[in-house]
Length: 462
Image (cartoon, rainbow, N blue to C red; front, side, top):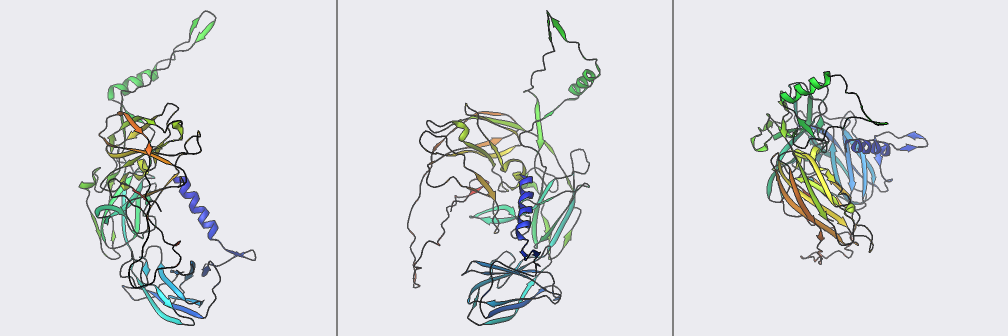
């Protein structure tokens, strides 16, 4: 998953490079389409604390009526200008790495702001956008032996009210809040651009969720070292055939361990985490803590697909259900999926203790054909909240699903049965109330169905 994210970032950088007559255009003024009009919006961006102008701030102007996006960058005086604007409604916002986002008319960094209604030929000048330097949290992550831990994912979470429930979520509007930062060769990390508030810092090691680590006792280690020092055993000759020694049987009785997400100051229970408090532009250092090995287990089960469909077309996913809305386990479990074999059996390995939702989904194709797996994307909304899943199975084909709640405590769980049932359909009519006239074209209305927060996920269907 990490590789795909990096590749996507590279692709976005390539797409954003605009060329004109074979030359790369500067990033001073990037526009999706040429502006045609006689209006203008101009102003400046300043530091709220000092009142000083800020240069190289990205100012984005979005024409909501025309679905156009225009970008400009402030000069040494902090000034920006958008000329040749047609009349319409516009939203204006400024952003810079390490600084809080500033939207026109918004009182907070995570609010959308107030739209600007620009009349034909109107010149709106002297628009002021004020922002603050974001806070910083720095520290060091150590592994279970006390050495610096390289490549550990570290994120700052804040408590937000999502659908009536108070839960931990990535910082709204913070760049990279969903996937966080990774520690360097010294095990150090730096989270920047944070608004003032209280934060929970979580570290998640990058480990393959299907690799089992067996914890060996001292006696087993001594026996293994002694066996390694013995000369190799000669092959046994039987008649004219030579056979080697039989390999050792696979150990299924060993205790498996894994790295669970750890919350500052060094606990695997989010309820025991300590909050890190930041003021405006404050830098908080020495947020150091250590990773922990915990006992893990396996989840094995059986998928019962729709009649006449092979089980290989079913997608099985394991999602954490935690107070942190699944955030703490994203690197290990939130993208954990399995494909059943021909008999419908599936296995999840190295599952750390916690509560989970085990689900199966499939979309039925043509009669007699295998159900197509629902391709699922996990993403984070800019307004915060738990990670979201969105599938593209298609509304013209019947969908099937199954779900079980599971509590892991380091022991293996088997005989989980997921019997897929037809999904439900919801339909209705949108009606407009009030004195204003209803829009003549309702094709631009978007509907969303969001389940009540009963697990660490939000399945959004639009």
